Image 1 (cartoon, rainbow, N blue to C red):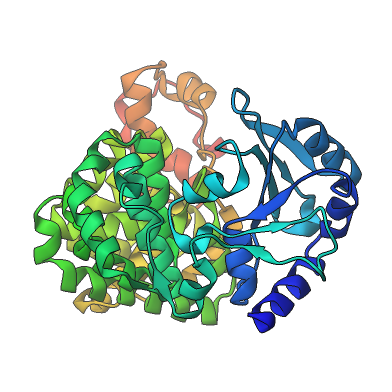
Image 2 (cartoon, rainbow, N blue to C red):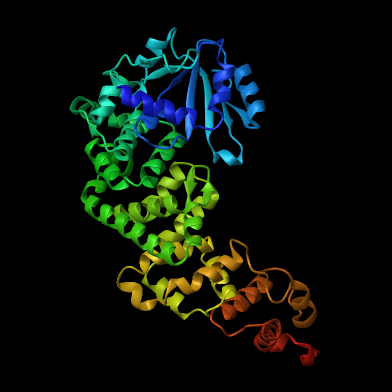
Length: 445
């Protein structure tokens, strides 16, 4: 236990702004609780520190934000819960401030989900002399790599804890206690009543974790997978695990040759959902049923942008790959091809990288060639080689469906290499709409 405490204190004292926090807490009762203690003792990097107080901590939280040049905001004003996010140098480190959930510390801890999260450390006293408050023997469970619920009604009180348990067990390589697993199974139906915003965040975290393969297995063992994704989840579980491994292997191979791809994978599409996780969500769940990712995206209230990209990835097939092999090998052609498919261009290339790993590789040329071209445009939409003014003045095409069709024809010509410049674009359209031309100076085309 002393070894664990030494490691814990060493990590905390090396955490950004922790010393400043200690100075603020000298004359107040405050406890560090939960995940930060757990992670520090096993050597995992800290991303957030949960602090609990017997009284309203809002004033202290605001003072801490000013001292550290951080950003303070409410999490739950009614419950007096707020957050301070560190400056850029802290890489997103956040401190959460909240009041006890119960009349005293011990009852607060007994109301938590898992024993490994029901541990507290007083920050009011000399840390070298203090001991952990551990009424549920969470430290012992952590040392024995066991995930155990705090109380028998833990999942009944909040079924989302089932998914949190899956995430903890997969990420920390824990064995789920037999009684805990049984309780998960018995309460899995309760997930239907949990707010979809909470469900999706936990699912995304499970998929994003390096231990996602074990997470999928635990979703099955806890019956949460069937509850969320239907009975077909069990039947395709081996395929899910295989596709997961394939995706990560192919992306890492592409990252090895083009490091910028790693940045693309990490780019957020919406809060809590980056490109890599969106692709895993779509490519894995489509094995259960092709339309499942889009239905869940609708049910789980994903953003319009996320839903559009999910639908586009789901629609990719062998014909898409053959078509990709036929497009002109330049940045504008690819950018317009992505626009026509209503998908983020980087996301499309990442999806193609996975498709390349299968028999379809014969239809594709090396994706490494495309990375700098896609990077040159980023997520920007290309500008058409001709504008509406030229179409109205020279081809007598007015705004509306006919102009839209003309621009679509031009973009398609660019995609397949028929047009490569503004002059070629004007000549192409003039030839197509020759019957509309009265007096066109072809020397200016």
